[in-house]
Length: 442
Ligand code: PGA
Ligand code: ZN
Image (tube, rainbow, N blue to C red; front, side, top):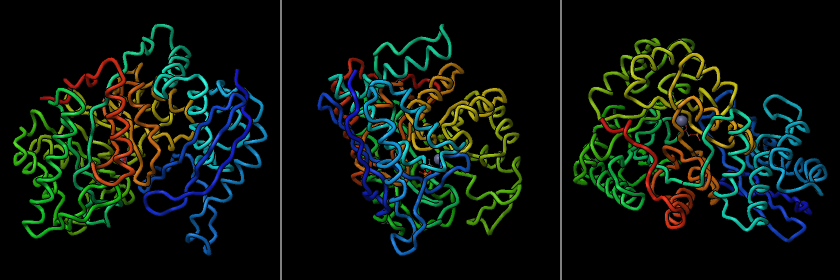
């Protein structure tokens, strides 16, 4: 038992210069925890609501002073004097205090800031690294779901980086329809080597783009290059060439992942490809299009290949490629256990993207992770396009033995904060091996 003495929130800025929330917590024993909340651009409709002030005179309406006040004036008095180790009880108290389905009253951003700062304060109070503290909380969730689920045995594992190379969509001025072309060093023996391979490809790619007259220095929100390419396909071609130039074998040791983020170019029941003279595709045609990409490029993972409510399309997509391609639901699931259970039942996707601020508390995030594990879905722990120096998700990925971590490219310090924390964890944990990658190597 260690009582919460003080909870204090303030407004700080994220990597896009937009206001976000920082929370600090102090316990009776003097332990401290601090967290900063990330923010998405291509958000799913089912995400926890991000509370913003809407006052056009401050930060064009993006201020978070109301959410900060909610923490300092409502949440803090409720949680003060309670045990900092009671993570699930404290998260439940905040959810009840908010009282809405999507955390719209106090804000998912407010709840998440407190939830993560609580975990950090508790880990500090227990004198253990954050990833160890997360393991106990994950085991709580696993045992709630099923007795026969293997518990997290502290054989922590490094996640395989899924790293942004070229950005489009809402992350880079809408120059491409697809949001990200990423790489995964599936053949790397360990994290350190994988990171070096990624950096090598990234540099070759910048040079290739510049040499051919495209913007090989300008980067999008997540650090991927944001060149004005005439087609989505050309983006994948450039990445494959960069892998070859780096003397890595595409499809064998380095594969490609896509985040199509299709929700954001869906119009009514169609998908509108702006780079192809506004071509409109049905859901089935969009799947055919993805199939041609899969046959042409060494792609082993596709995220949000279809839009967030196209459940039937997701079923077909999974039926057609799910046995050999990782089919990741981001906007589809929004880290929400109810949506994930629906997906499992319908056999939609075989992998779930985990973004803590999509759901808003640590406990709910771990519940979603536990359900995904039970169903055999792979896990991709992900940052947001608006990020900060907060490194919590690096620890989370190691605890839950995430199959991959997706934190943007290997430039921009809000991205490096996480990669560098992973380098520290790589030294600390007993097993430096990646999670199983066999399904990603064809
Ligand atoms: P977002 O992008 O943070 O803007 O939602 C990340 C993603 O779509 O995976
Ligand atoms: Zn996504």
